[in-house]
Amino acid sequence: MASQHPLQPGLFSWPSEDPELLGSRCMDCGEHAFPSQDSCRACSSEQTEIVGLGRSGRLWTWTIQSFMPKSPYLTYETAETFHPYGVGYVELPCGLKVESRLRENSPETLAIGLDMDLEIVPVRSDDDGRQLMTFQFHAAVSP
Ligand SMILES: [Zn+2]
Image (cartoon, rainbow, N blue to C red; front, side, top):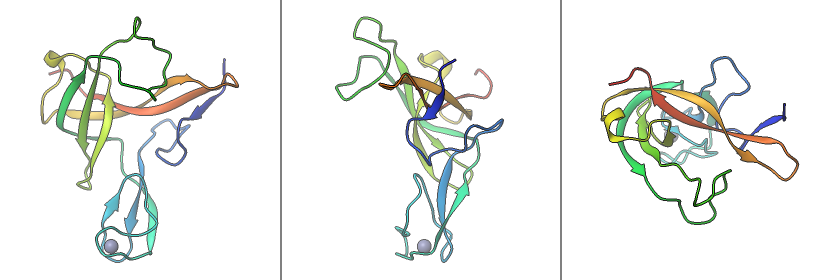
């Protein structure tokens, strides 16, 4: 099996049995950020720490991407093999809303307020044949 690597480092804990999103928390005012930030956008403090943001949240809003996005959109897919996918904002327990690809891709399977869980999925291979992984959310239970 091809080796697997995160598409972007630092976004999620992985490999892990229970991967979670990684962000930052301001040690002065408690503001969270995703992706992690070296300084706080709320109070400008530079005292931030990397924290786990959990692996579940609530679907805040969503849409279906029904046509192939413009370049750079690097996956295994071509215009002929493209499959629609869901895109949404998932509200995490800390209050942050994170934009994410969604496993579900039809209006019948998505609803605002759904409980969502994180999963780590392959996106594409790089030039060295390594499989690149990213995060997405899926409904914890079907509506
Ligand atoms: Zn702050």
